[in-house]
Length: 200
Image 1 (tube, rainbow, N blue to C red):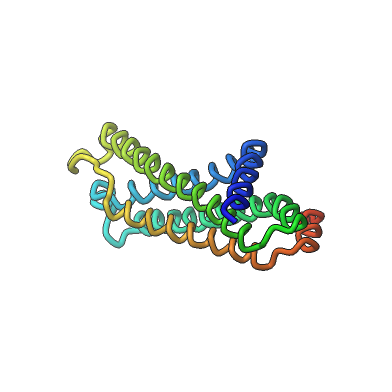
Image 2 (image 1 turned 60 degrees about the vertical axis):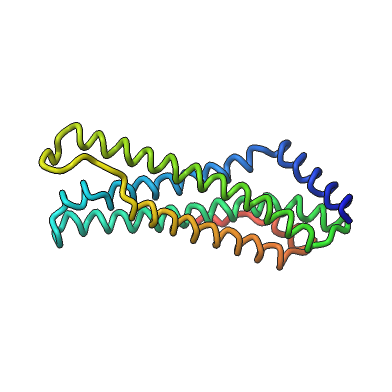
């Protein structure tokens, strides 16, 4: 059993190296979405920006509205990228199922693979996003938009919100993976590969 698990892992690793483009695309999508959200949170919820925005003013409401749309857009973007990645993976999964590999073993291997990809992309995205937020804040500070305020610091509250967003995205990715494997069978995967996206 252990030998078979090692063989499956080795095969998946080889396929990952051969088809690195799809993996990079998924990784970059997750990292980019987390980067945008983390940087936006880091800037928006900093004391520097919060003090510059009038309490209850139109500018604050407009920024929050734009921010909300951006977060929802990033969330949908990641889920769409995940759907494309699973659609690509369905061909590999179909081959393994046709060869008699147990669905349970495949599910575990796929979850492990997506977990490692998603976790690394999320961590990198949040770190780079906070560095970007710091850079943006320092630029705002340098051009003296609000010279009466203290120096810019990335918001801890923003970091926590970014972490919450990342966790929600991560949970949705894992749920999508489980749902994909639960309904997967050879015939459905063959038909899935033949589907075309409708043009509206």
